[in-house]
Image (cartoon, rainbow, N blue to C red):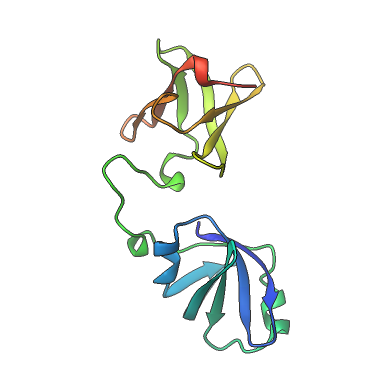
Length: 158
């Protein structure tokens, strides 16, 4: 997922997007998919906390309005390489979550951006919703092969 289309911007055919990815990923965007269709990107630019995307073949705000609210996707191959200790959210969504002793807590269902660190949202096995800050003190490990995230119980809040 690269973001969510919000609404047209201005009258020159730019789509306002709430991004889920880094500026680096969006600045080089060439194509994206939404609502079962593929779109070629002519240009992208940052506008405050959002991105504006100019799409080939779409010149006015009326045609862009149909994309409002749609989730935008891009090919994984277009994503920038990450540092060794980084992962994309799409790679860990749905992973099981355990505490440092191996006791199951639930599964990762969402995340939200916060000031210094993103916050993972966990759907607990007990039906409660938990949150944990994605920092080295609270997220002990992410095992991509086992599809498992280990967190420090002290970092959980409900």
